[in-house]
Image (cartoon, rainbow, N blue to C red; front, side, top):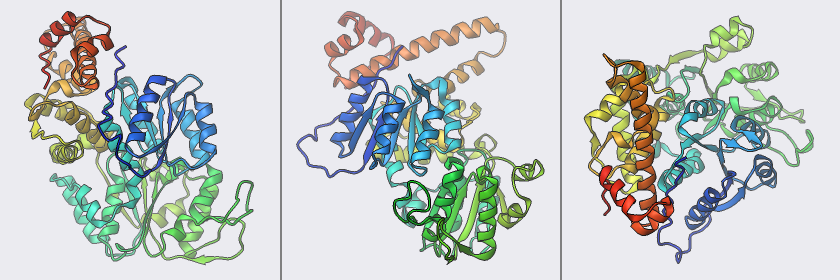
Length: 468
């Protein structure tokens, strides 16, 4: 209902910016597509727009796309269907989903399946740009960049894990990291790599959950031209690409039985044979794997090979979810806040007491990744020195209201308050978005909101909205 977007196009139209990547935008809302297209083009990106899943996939097959920005709800397909078809075309292509608050848990499942990240509607220009930049440059980090991004935390659980990293990093042991989606498994893998003697060699990350069975062989081991239909040139597999360094296999439990067999043979013999070739290539690669499920249970259920499990489980690290690391929540939150200030040109200094209370009581199903997205959004919406409760996403803000209302009030009373708060929050956000998108021109903002100026002024007073 309140589907307004802020797109800060800035005053850079006269400045030449070299193209930074090609982005495919898939959304059936033509207004949103137009605004995103203008935004990215002004920032030096090339864009391709599609208003349906089928047209988007046709555009993708033409090649040259570096990232996909896709609405979760499309008229001809849902997000998971689109994502699976994208990954069949290009398994390693970063995909960011645009979704409503009500679909956040679904978005978390999409990340578990291999999506790079998600952004909730309504969103801001800086939020989209920041996430896009991360998606396009994620694999180009070096040690200095990683150290800047890596937050250790202070809790006893993470201190124990850091001690394990220090112990296992200098060895050649394979490492199994278990933990929920978004809990930081890849950061732990990178920390091991950068603390090891292999830190000047490649770190290659592969999401096995995003690989259809028929493409996993090619991505892992490579192929030669003509090995199968569509193999128009030789391809270097991840093992060879990671030579001398570390190969991180995320969601390894999703590998097919055939691929598990080939992986086991590679780890035993330290050689790979590209598809369609009869020559073996020696490889020197350290293996770190991750799973968001109990692989030992998968072994018992016959879903994962026991011999492969013992081969990859040289040293196990169990990463607790964020809800069990409450002492670390604000260690991460302040790090993300300072990064958001730098990215968005803000000067937010902290979180008020209501926000701190809400953060500690929220379950964080998306773990650290969700916390980062929330902090980024809060900083973008903040006008003062502290993040306040009115900038929180609906599901966090309303659970805060639910907690506050626990006591003598009836369930119906709590629900009425929550619905009222929802309407007021949506209305306030729509007004703020309209004012910002029109450069705080109240006449244009009122026209955009389809109300008269007097109504807009009254609402601004009611919600204590002040313009620069």
